[in-house]
Amino acid sequence: MTPKHAALELWPAAASAVAVETDYLILAFTVLTLVLTVPVFLAITWFAIRYRDGQEANRDTSGIRSNLIEISWMLIPFLLTLIFFVWGARLFVISKNPPPDAMVIEAIGRQWMWKFQHPTGQSEINDLHVPMGQPIKLRIISQDVIHALYLPALRVQMAALPDRYTELWFKADKPGTFHLYCSEYCGTDHSAMEGSLTILSQGDYQDWLTHSGAQQSKVAAGKAIYNAYGCGTCHDDGSNVQAPKLAGLYGRAVRLADGRTITADEDYLRDKIRNPNGNRLAEGYKQIMPSFAGVIPEDDLGRLIDFLKSNTRTVGDAASGEATR
Image (cartoon, rainbow, N blue to C red):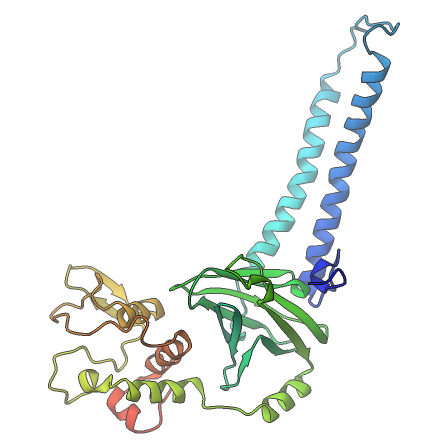
C-alpha cells in the first residue's frame, strides 16, 4: 500500500445518498464537539495562567449564583447531542431494513479473496459490478476465519463470519470504480485482500451481464450439486431409506425429537447439511446422514440451499426436470 493509495485518503469519495448523509452527520458532530469543548479548554488555560500560584489576583468569591446558567450549560449540550443520536439512529434503522425489491448478491470471504455471485449466475473474484439506482443486498459469509467487507465509497462495512450469514445493503447513485477491502485482520495477506466496486448505469450493467459469460442460475447449479452428492438417494420419493422428504420443506415448521418445534429456514438447512448430528434431529427419524462440513464448498452449499428453497413440489421431480420457484 503506497502513500497515494485510496485507502489512505482523508475523505474518500461518496457514491450514495446515505454515504453523503453519513459525511454530514460526522462533520456536524465534529463541529458541535469543537464548539462545546474548545471554549472549555481555552477557559482552563486562561484561569491556569491568570490564577497561577504566586500571581496577584482577587480570589474572593463574587457571591453571584445563577441556577438558570448552571441548568442551561448542562441542558443545551444534552439537547444538541440528542439531535445527533436521533439522526444516527435513523441511519442505523435504514441500514438494517433493505427494500423488498433489493437485488441479492452472495459474498463469500476466504483467505485472501472475495467472491461475489450474482442472481443470474455470474461470479466475480475481488470485483463487484452493481447497477446505479438499484438497491443491492449482500448476503455475506466466510469460508474460514472472520473477515469484514468494507466499501469506503458507500460508508458501509459488515463482518463476514464462519457458519453464519450477515447482510448489508446499499443503493449507489454515482458511477465509477471504487475500492473494497477486508477491514478485519485475517492473516498474513490481509492487506492484499482487496478489490474494486464498479457502479454502472442500468444499461451498462445489463451489457456487462450479457458479455460477462452468464453461468447457470443458482437454482440450476444447486440442482446439479444435489444430484452430484446423491442427496436424492435418501430424500427423494420412492427411496428405501427412511429420511425426511425435502419437497416444500423450506419455511415449514419442523418438530424435533426433543419436542421442540422450529422453522426450516436457511440456517436450519445449512446446519443440517454441515452438522446433521447436532441437536436438530427431526421427530420420528434416526440420525444416519453423514456430515458434509468441509466436503461441500461454501459457495456450492449456498447454491444447494437455493435449490432446496425453490422446491414447492417433489424434489425428485424437480431434480429430474426444471426446478420451480
